[in-house]
Length: 331
Ligand code: NDP
Image (cartoon, rainbow, N blue to C red; front, side, top):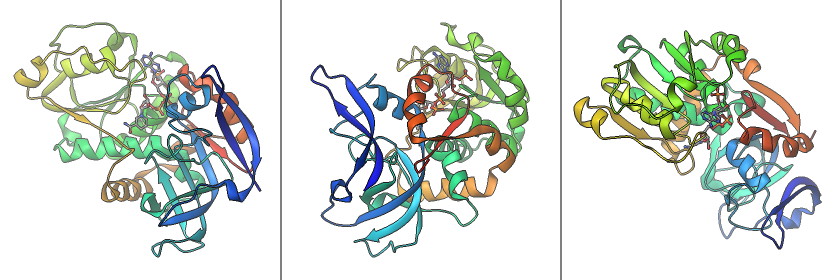
């Protein structure tokens, strides 16, 4: 038997979330490459908040165990690449949406979806980073692939106190960039400065409709917010600069004109963590193991139990959770 956060769909299409004790035989079957993992830690991401509250139809199969990421140890494997005892990480691939996820003591997944836990990363730290940290690193790597360098100027991070934003601020600062952190939480300015932000930008300066072209300021942007914030970020990016878009905390719309792209050669790069190829995942996780500041991680992450994960879901949607919630699935 193992404990799991369990989602069912009510007749009126609302979601019922509870903690259940399930038999191992309930774990999903795979025709090939099935791997069973004793989950150590999972996390609560924005998407998990949507799944648990049922606010948005992210769950594509019922019943569902949510949790889009986890770290754990292989306990059984039909996949020659994975042996019992291997320490593994999983992010995305529709886990927690179309396949049972990490908010449980056990998971069974396809071996293709697993990444080896880098030797330098403790399991708790891997989930303190989680999908948010891995996505932040995908953004940083994308900026660097576009040629953005620390000497080029300021990098704007939006939604800076969120999971992706917090890790992005810390990583960029560790890599020598000057970081401007945009936040709606003035009281968290010290937190962001401790993570390495040199400047705090009031979220309100970016979130309202703005002009198509504004004063050139950013050499690069990590945007977790979308909507007018992303439009304003594009409009104030310097000639030849790069904007990475990974989130939609403000909205899914993008009320931008072509002006920044055709007059300033600004590049807008989309970042997807869910279906990213294995090589990019491995590069991101190895980079995180190397660059992450463990003191920053202690500030970013808070450990909670499975029952608290249920309670935390509405808060993450309301945007009032600071940093990362790491779920100890045995707690
Ligand atoms: P969090 O909820 O931890 O952080 C989001 C932050 O955005 C909040 O903390 C807040 O920061 C800011 N925010 C919230 N509401 C608004 C609003 N209405 N207007 C402007 N800013 C707002 O989420 P994550 O960091 O985990 O994820 C951020 C986004 O990235 C989400 O939209 C998520 O779905 C997406 N995402 C995408 C991935 C991908 O593969 N592309 C992977 C992971 C996440 P502050 O108060 O500091 O402004």
